[in-house]
Image 1 (cartoon, rainbow over the protein chains, first blue to last red):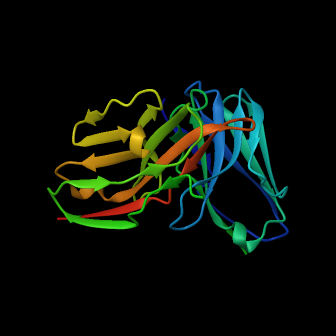
Image 2 (cartoon, each protein chain N blue to C red):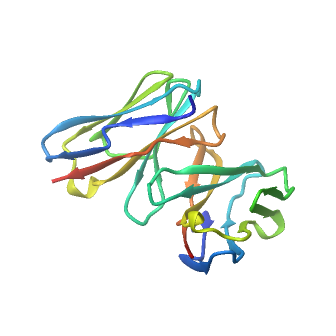
Length: 112
Length: 116
């Protein structure tokens, strides 16, 4: 199994909602990542988890809260988002850091 | 200053033409890693190649080849005999050590159109 899955594929939420994005990998990878990608822009790193511990937080606003319940799962909890947070959210995993990353298909988030 | 520069925003070629995508990087570290990823219209990023800073050997994989030159801080990617399926956005990326560990920075990407 060499894929990273992400749910949901699409999410529309209001500014007062609380929602979560989920990511799963079964490749035995020990590093997992969240990226944000706006249209026609490169992915921007948000968080890195290495061995289930948060190792990098790129000064992401607290309305984004990551969680790594185990080595296969990565969540991104969303609360009180702004319309400018609308983007494609990509999850990735890698054997370690800085190995090549395997990306999921992303969750397209729209904040109304 | 941009860490990874992909100066070509868009390139359009006709099928079977060769095309080179440029990537120039900037780092003070002696240990770093360079990557190329492909993002087809479907949106999912696909890993193509990784190079570490101590390995300047060029690489060929089928129609793809990569030229890593530390002297010019470049890591260029050539597609030989391009095909329509090569149409995608190609990102060059740099991983270097930062607070907390290695951090990956992507270039702005080059959008490649291959016309039949």
